[in-house]
Image (cartoon, rainbow, N blue to C red):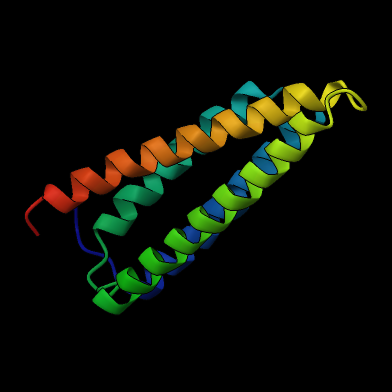
Length: 129
């Protein structure tokens, strides 16, 4: 596939988003949720191939470092908040019995996130860069 200019990439990206939003809104309004999912998959695939064929560099090393720091902070803050909310909901199970299920879901989701984060951290730290 031929390399495309950055301006063309931005235009194609905007057109894909407009098309995806219009198709999704029409079919969701009609009550069909399957077609928007399929269109979203193909739009994401098309944007992936477009991004690979841009002749300009879209990200630099600094952006990757900032993104890594931001995602680590989001992971840390969300893990702490989910654990606190889950513990509070489980401890209030006598007053609010429906909170027990939500609290357990929060706690187990947070544990799964931490396990997944640990596995990915171990994997990426062992990879040669």
